[in-house]
Structure formats: structure tokens, C-alpha cells
Length: 413
Ligand SMILES: Cc1cc2nc3c(=O)[nH]c(=O)nc-3n(C[C@H](O)[C@H](O)[C@H](O)COP(=O)(O)OP(=O)(O)OC[C@H]3O[C@@H](n4cnc5c(N)ncnc54)[C@H](O)[C@@H]3O)c2cc1C
Image (cartoon, rainbow, N blue to C red; front, top):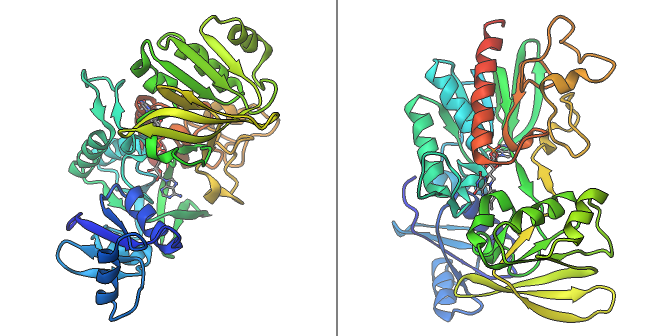
């Protein structure tokens, strides 16, 4: 990347400004934000650069050059992100450059299997956006998510993996023994095998303050971040099985766990409900919604609550909040494809494919490999896979497992 000293001049109401900021954020590229509605110097600068017109976003780079209302493709080009592959065909194309995808890629490239990784945002996936990974084996003091991701990227580059960035896979199709991935710029790349490692996204509440305190009081994983709250007070948001189970886990660390449930009952199973409701450290508030996350000095301190039955509002002082309202797998691009998904949209793999009455097409003469999908030659690993454990180490482990199965599969085509 050429440089990362960037200033985005825009306004809070401007959708193109939001898009540009989101693009930079997703690619982990730091920038300064100037809202020209509030900053007259900033407004003057924009008008001067645009010959008297007030066009936003105007994005200034440290070499003095600037872009006005750039498309994402123009931004990617300016930032020298590699968006085109050097060839059209590879042994393996990995979709998604998170821990699962990059680990698989470094395994295969190291064995001289031509590997292309297509990533729509920053390499490292969800791990790149995590302030600190405290449970990574081999890092006794923990490791910043961004540092871990950079190391993973460097390691895969050392073995010759070709990496594409700012390219979203929009569809897959199959042509004889080849599988083809289409990207948002209209390119098509084919390969003898594909690995789907596109991960998933924790559902968010989308209320004010939520994104401001991500990793600084707002969390999505008790196994990952619960130990930071020893002796502290935490809130759990959600009423399903995972909210209840994670609350029980949090009682091992926190002094008090308050579960905030939007409805007047849990959706969790009866056994777990009983454990939760009888736990001395757990307090449950029904009909309660979080309307705002409030903090001080970049750290969450309070939740603004609404009782949706009485209309009553109050602030709950809290050290941390864990949101468990579900996960969305990044599998939208598989719509219309014959890759089998579970009821939530996660990819089904391996022996689970043989549980129905009919074997999937192409598996008449052999069983699927571990982590192979219902389409022979297409594999899946990490958070995008059903029954995966949603941890960095297990995603990386699944990446290596998939790589070894892909190596075997490639011997047959
Ligand atoms: C806030 C937060 C904190 C966490 N903390 C921890 C922790 O402390 N310890 C721990 O073990 N785990 C933690 N996790 C979970 C961990 O980050 C994930 O389990 C892990 O990153 C999953 O890896 P993955 O490669 O399967 O998927 P992801 O990390 O989700 O990577 C998938 C990649 O695919 C890309 N992608 C998606 N769709 C497309 C497409 N159509 N085209 C191209 N690219 C695409 C995405 O941009 C992404 O980069 C945390 C997660 C979050 C959100």
C-alpha cells in the first residue's frame, strides 16, 4: 500500500462519504474524518479543491493528491490494492482471507499448489478487527488482532499465495471439472478446487454507540473476551440458547451478569433456562431493549434501556456488554447454487451430507472428504461452516484440514 495518511472531508448525512469511510474501515486503513458541516476550515478546503463547488467526499492523500466522490474501485486503485489476478486459472481458489482461508492457502501454496485468495475487505477477517486475541496458542501475552492478521498474510505471501483484495465473490458456477468464481468487477477465475472460507457476521443491534465501543466494552464472544471481566459487572443481550449458555460461562468471571431479554420469556431450552434462572449471579430483565451504548474515555460505562411494555427508560451502569442475537453466514453469493446449506445458511460438509435418503450428485462412488461440500471439489472451512466453533484457532485448524483434503482431491482431477 502506498501510504495511509488520509483525510476524508464529508458530512454526516452524505451516503457516499459513509461508503468511502466503510471501505477504508473494512480494509483497516486509518484516516482522519472532517465533517465540513462543523469545520469551516474543512469546508473552505473542499470548496477550494473543487473550484468553488462543495463536493463530498473529497479525500486527501499525504502526497497532496485528492479524489472527489471516488468509487470503491478508484479508491482501491489509489491505495494500490491488488484487485486483478495474474492468471485466469488456478489449482485452488480460496474465497475469503480470514484465518481459515489464509491458513489453507499457506498450506497448499507451500506444497506447490497454485493458490489464489479472493478477499473483499481486510486480510485477517473478523480477527483483524479484534483488539486483542488472548487465547491464541503461542502468544503468552495475547496478540493484537491486526498484528496476527498481518503475520498470517506475510506468511502466506512467503509461500507464494496470490492475494486479491477489494474483490467480492458474487457467484459461483461449474463447468465440467472446473469451478468458476465471479467477482464484483466482472472478472471470472476458474480452478480445479474451491474453498469457501467467507466466515460469518455477528448480528448487531444497530443502535447508537454500539460500533464506537466494539472491543472496548461491546463483545460477541464470552469464550474470547469473558476473562477480561473478572470481578466485574456485565450485561448479556439476547434470549436464545447462546445468550443463556454464554451467560452461564460469564458467571465464571464476572461478579454479576444481567441478561436483557426483549420478550417476556426465553427462547432457550428448558434445561438451560432453569440453570440460568436459579443462578445466584444472574439477574434477568424481561421486555428490555438496549437503545444506546454510552461510554467515557473510549470505554463502555452504561447502557440506555427501554422497557418495551411500560415505556420506562433507565441507564444501567456496566463494565461490559455481550451481544448474542445470532450470526449471519456470508453465503448470500451461493444463492441458486447446489451447495447444501443448513436452515441458517451455513455450509454443510463431510459426512453430514450423507444423512439424507439421497447421496448428493457426484458422490455415487465415493464419500465426501471431511470439509467437502455437496459439490465435489468445493470445500468449506471456518465460521461459514455449520457446526464450526467460531474461534480463530479452530478456523485455522479447519483451514489446514481442508488444505490436506484438497491436496488429495486434486490428485484425482
Ligand atoms: C469482535 C470479535 C472478537 C473476537 N474475538 C475472538 C477471540 O478473542 N478469540 C477467538 O478465537 N476468536 C475470536 N473471534 C472469532 C474469530 O474472529 C472468528 O472465529 C474467526 O475470524 C473465523 O475465521 P474465518 O476465516 O472462518 O472467517 P472470518 O474471520 O469471518 O473471515 C472471512 C473473510 O471472508 C471475507 N468474505 C466474506 N464474504 C466474501 C465474499 N463474498 N467475497 C470475498 N471475501 C469475502 C470477509 O471479508 C472475511 O475477511 C472474535 C470475533 C469477533 C467479531
